[in-house]
Amino acid sequence: MRVGHRFGKFSLQKEVGEKKLFSILSNKTGAYFMQSLGLQQSKFQGFHIPLPTVDGWDLAKIIDRLDSSNKVESVTNELTQVTLNGTFEETFFMPKDIGAFSYQAKNAVNQTLDLVLDMRSIYDFSTTGRVYNRSHQDNKIIIECRGFFLVIMTNLKHVFNGVWEPADYSFDETRGENMAWWVYRALRFNLENDSLIVFAASTDLETAENQATNIFRMLDTHKHLQERRVERLTTSEKDFSTIIAKKSLYDLVQDMPGVGRGIFAGLPWFFHYWTRDELISLKALMLQEKYSVAKEVLFKYLRAVQPDGRIPNRLPHADLASSDGIGWLYKRLYDYVSMLEEKKLVETHLPMTDLVFIEGTISYSIKRLMHNHYTRGLFISSPQESWMDTRGDLDPRLGARVEINALAFNAFKLLSKLNLLMGNDNQGTRYQKVLVEHVATFKKTFFDGKNLFDGEGDDTIRPNIFLACYALPELLTKKEWQKIFVNALPKLWCQWDKNKGGLATIDKSSLLFRTEHTGGDDESYHRGDNWFFVNNIAAIALQSVNARKFKKEIKQLLFASEEDLLYNFGIGHASEISSALNYEPFGCPAQAWSAATFIEAKKLIK
Image 1 (spheres, one colour):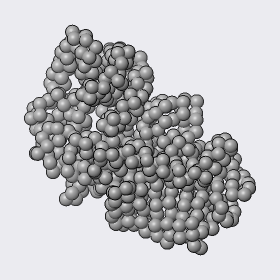
Image 2 (cartoon, one colour):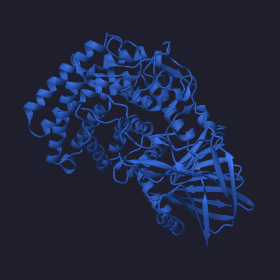
Image 3 (cartoon, one colour):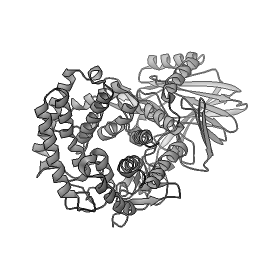
């Protein structure tokens, strides 16, 4: 299989062999279409649309897959669409804001396309009521099942199959999920030299019909508008991999009805606004001067501060608590205000009423946080509350943790800046002193002169030291950070080949370390698996401490992220993780913070 990328003057391609490969398209209001391009299929593949719920949204699956007679030899990500070439050419396109996508085929003489359906709420695996009702009028086919409507518009001839068959979700089996499920092979289309099919879905038949008609009649217009949007990402950008990362992040910035704009943590299964993922990813939007989107996200979480001083771990709400989400809010608010101040845009985007609101909310938050989650000058976590939130029975990471405190201390830094901006110099100076006091406690607790501990009384080496440096560099001197990194890197470093390296999530000598990803049981998730967002943040931290000394490691970390983005797993998207032993991008194939931190690192590291 050849994988390529093409847009405007930019073009890349490479032979990658047989791999787990998926293409993912998004309409930016909750719908997506994911297609398997490799040897494995997933229950998350296909066409999905948003499904409103009482407190937010879920997704509904409509199409499981499109099976063509094409023997695909190459896939090209054209940023606005995906094209497959082999026996003939197939192109998939999803327009912005519309719950529909188009399929086009060229030079497809005597070729076929089968429609395989699986209409249900995304996590509804009950078998009752799975009856597919169909009707046909002129160039419009309507299929209804369980209150979901699929409208298909085409001039192609077709035949009704109506056959149930077992699904082969071999990709999910590699994640530890073994599920017997049946899907419905509904229709076969007879393709022609130049074929067009539009698929639209909704819980309302009229909406689905209008969307299908719109795309069928105005496809070229929608494609042109999409090209214009993507062109904005290429403005003054010379690095194609950065452009592709920007497009990936752009696809994950959503505008959910009734909730507003935000960033999905990832597709296909992290289709909600996860607090830490969204806030980590936000810096990349600020660097692209997307100040209004950034402000909307930041204020969404300011309004969500809870009585204990924290913010929820997800919107809509999920059960797990988050000890670092509030710290990331402090950090990103500081970044946002600082960036506006540097560009002399504070008054444009943050009038005095906004500054007062931010200052008041953060003051309330940090006071409540110190009342509920604080002891002896440090902020504490309960089991499974940090970003390393899985398998709490093995190493729950409770108590005072290095990155949690580095992030939380940003509250004092932020409050100092806000008060100085508002002319409250005495308050600004007071918060500076509070920060200095907390930094001293941090250093006494976590730093032994050579190593930075992962937690109070826990000298385990983890890459959270890089998150701490990124969150608050002034915790230590550059010489001290350098000493820490020199000692930690050999214990965490995964050398995949001469060009690529990554960081394990725990010291490789630990009894908990796992060389291979263990799937859905989470045993390796934070006890070995490499995370691409951590690699990118580590590269930023290493660059800020001593770019010359760590030049090799920085280059290898970013090259691993770039190869993943370009030629692995979710084509044109950044993966969640890789095994520690081998370079195998895996997990969620389109992860927001992986793309966002890559953009941020590439901006800093030329």
